[in-house]
Length: 303
Image (cartoon, rainbow, N blue to C red):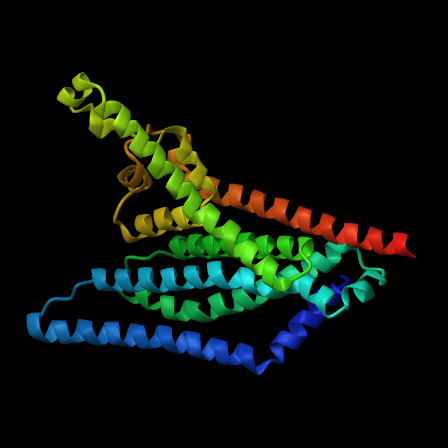
């Protein structure tokens, strides 16, 4: 099987970098310190009350999972937003385009190299998550679903960064636009639902009969709720709440945006959301390939 030259070079440079090893050590050291402090507090509580609160270990699992999710969502765009635009700034993109590599190979090589770095960080922290298995409450399929959610958000944010990196000449602009679109997807879909929910409540409050019958409590954000299928934060929130046993999927969303009907989408929210986000990532990658292809055609025309 032929190895992608761009991927091979990028991973080799990253593997030989002292910065990667330092990041892995610092990140896992912080998580390990938090876990040790949590276990120490549990032991001290047992000495005082002779009771073990097993829920504290589930809380520890949730904390570590949230930290890793935030790391993936905010670091991946930074890693990929300068991948193509950085080549332009160093005037090395033309050299890549003169090779026999296809634009798709360049894009996939850059994206997978950044993806591999983040995957290494996630996998390296999984032994710390395994502490929860000692006391129960977390199953193997929960960790696999968590890993799938991590891979999805990493691919979505990474493809977003490399898409705008191929469209803009400056890495700074590509980075700003990538984070802007990410914030729009994460916060914008939430804001739209909050706005629609407030409008629905205002409409119900304007009706005297509705207020008398207490129908105001039945207000919801309507079909706009399904915009949250694009939102990786909402998906992660629903998934981690379900694993922690706090709220099922429907209750988690209804607490935010009012009661919605129980249907196929609500019952399979996490998996459907992951599929839609993977589709969105595919669209970003397709646009990135088209952007590099356009640069290659423009270079050929100049000749």
